[in-house]
Length: 249
Ligand SMILES: [Zn+2]
Image 1 (cartoon, helix red, strand yellow):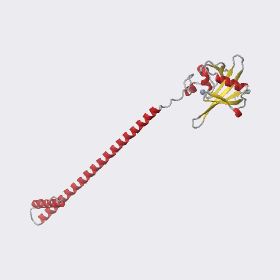
Image 2 (tube, rainbow, N blue to C red; image 1 turned 180 degrees about the horizontal axis):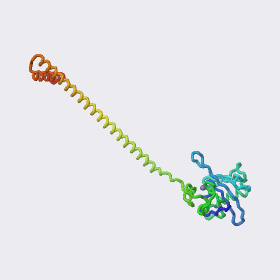
Image 3 (cartoon, rainbow, N blue to C red; image 1 turned 180 degrees about the vertical axis):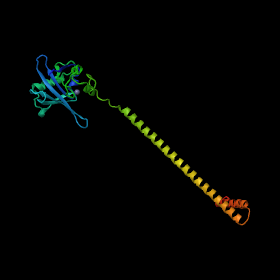
Image 4 (cartoon, protein in one colour; image 1 turned 90 degrees about the horizontal axis):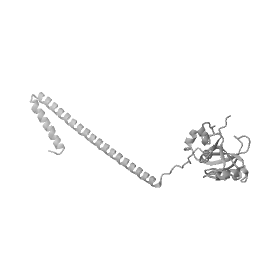
């Protein structure tokens, strides 16, 4: 199997080391001493990230023979104390402390990735990926390759306040518009009701007038009198009654 391990340089070292699932080999170029470390960060269900746990390869199986030695939090390595499988003065822990204290650019040690993506652990194949130790998709997810990861900028308090004021204004605008719409609708409904009531009253009046005319005509006819005069008289009587009823007479 063709090896795809590659040497990391500059800022790519820290990016790779903190990518979340990194296996890297640190070699002292003067003595040739080297250690392979695994640095893993876990994300829980709520998206909260654990510290970066550091373990050292201590056996022939470079998949499973790793011993926990400590963790990195806020960019500082802290030896794992009672839980660490190697003492604080053991060569591997001392090597890692020295490496992490000197991770700046240029690194005094040679640092190699082992051919697997530092974030997802998949085998690297493309030259650019091998150069930075992170696959193209994972590089996108972790930020631009080589660039130190920037924290998401928090909105400035002033902006936040301005945002809240604007939001309150928007709510007031909406409430005013809503109130106006409701008032307009109520007015329109009242007008419609008045129109309907007026129409009903007018229709009743017309019906009453027609009835009075019909009755007067029938009565006059039966008595052999002039039907037209009788009709006119009946309407006048009816209208007189209306005027009295409304206090107009
Ligand atoms: Zn990956």
